[in-house]
Image (cartoon, rainbow, N blue to C red; front, side, top):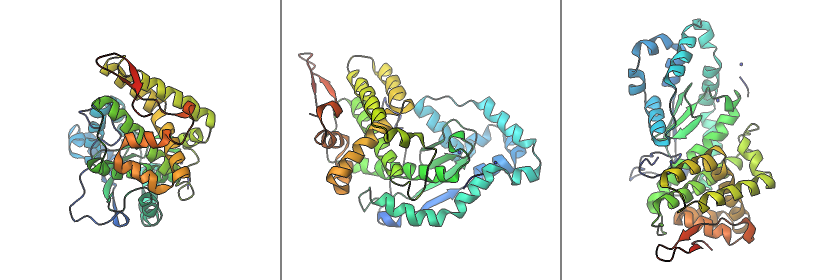
Length: 341
């Protein structure tokens, strides 16, 4: 259907910045719910004059905007406030009729109308990738004109105006499965059984690889439910040359551990892992390989154990030239070895 889209204490910035712990009495995964919050977007589109009058308080009081500010602080990506206010001003120049029929509202209204059907299909799909006790219930906030197209930070935030969606609601619905998976994965961090690496930055990078990779694979496997013809990541995942190219980039990134400063490694991690999609495509390929060869239970088992298990399990299934190499430098000898082979 078309219409006219961190953990601040760690050096690597996670897509899931903060997700509330599920309540003690939380039901099983299949009982998870979504709470769609459209108020912020409706104010921007229907009542832009009021937003302008409210000024900076709008960014302080609206949950969606508060989360965007948190995303900016966590990732280090600047919010172009002047451009944002310009866009709101342009919205104020439209007539009430033009605002009521605006594509941003039409797209959001469609998503709200499709909520029940979405949950009927999405919840079983998502729960097939998570332990059955995980409850991923969470609010979903809709906004516009902000830098990220979607993220999770206390709630899922969808930037309906992102050009990436190409005004296609199905692209957004598919992406929503990606973001919801992050919620379940975040809860599982509290239950990991593996011993984390002493190098917190390296362990964070591995966590990012598993988290974004599995979320991408979950979305890719959902295309029969929610087609996403414009999702670039899926085209990359289907091309062996792109997978091999990005695997080399990810291995080059890990090879830099211990050879550059933590700050430089953070920049490299963001560029190669996020901007260039290395974490997403390589991690999705790893999840797909485990799922295809060992089955879904084994894939879920790597979530329960942690990212070291994810990499080790994948490496056990592929030839040496397709493995993920994690160098570890011995503090006494200076010799380099791999912790996961």
